[in-house]
Image (spheres, one colour):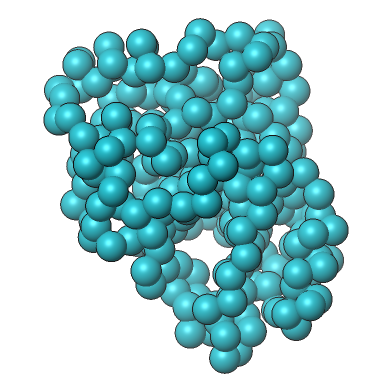
Length: 239
């Protein structure tokens, strides 16, 4: 696998491609197009898909801009229209509403379902619906790694108090889905502000404060209320 992680002020994104056929995918691109174009050119890649794991509220997606130049298709989960509808009602939320509106105008070529696969040469990326941070949040599993978006971060999970968020949905995504997956999966999230590159699902099951204690939905909701700093202009990041 040809692989590259990009880090823009804690926003993590990825390019992954088949080593044999040089067909690839871009996941959660943000901030600048040039680094992606440069890497794709250097590696002589053919990008087939540009994927957003969810509707972002803290940065603008670059998916259509990259897809247009690279001849790729933009991809999101099937609940994205629902998430965008929720965002239409947000009028005054520390500037987040402007990002939501701009991202809502980004085109989506393909809406995928639970279990759908994106194939890039010899690589397969399987979609797992994991709402909680947003209604359209999903993870992508490919070979030995899982791209967790803002569902599972290193050491915690994504906020559930932003538009479309739900602690009940997050509880099910974490304990009903991710906990059952292989401990050996390498975790690549969409954000990290502590300088981490990745983790493993087995490590997170033991050390992540959102996973290492089994809680009821009600207990989990109360736990998250105390986990995240109050939502204000300085605390709109995913984690």
